[in-house]
Length: 178
Image 1 (cartoon, rainbow, N blue to C red):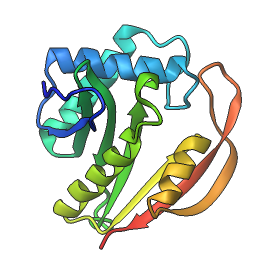
Image 2: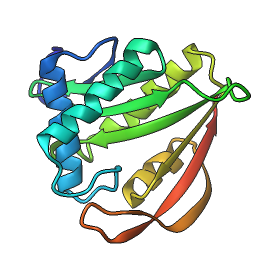
Image 3: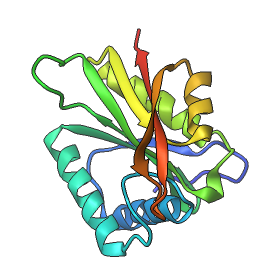
């Protein structure tokens, strides 16, 4: 695991595989986001088994080359992550999808999300993608994406549920990569 000193930017790494220790850390980040009310496809309470099953599925996608998985790490371990879904339909080989941009509450407002997004865009470009899309139900994430040059497409009311079961709106964005 990469160690960085306090006050420095976290290290961003592209993972080729997911170790058991990383699986544990990734599951903890996901659980923290769900516990904090983030609409990231899971309901509260999120069991450790469910979180680990999700990350094992992601690991299979990484192994097959269908996904790129990036993590942000500090001296305490993984504090954030983002994925680029590379596998797309035959008529969309130029497109990727940013998924599960998660930052642990202990690391928010430290620029971690911005670092992860820049790295995701770089990896997508390196893999031949010229267009990325994403969706979010977080106003904080919307501000991050707009500051980073993403274009808001629109919002669908009641598209998903928050972890406690309340409906929430979802906003869609795209970014052309140059």
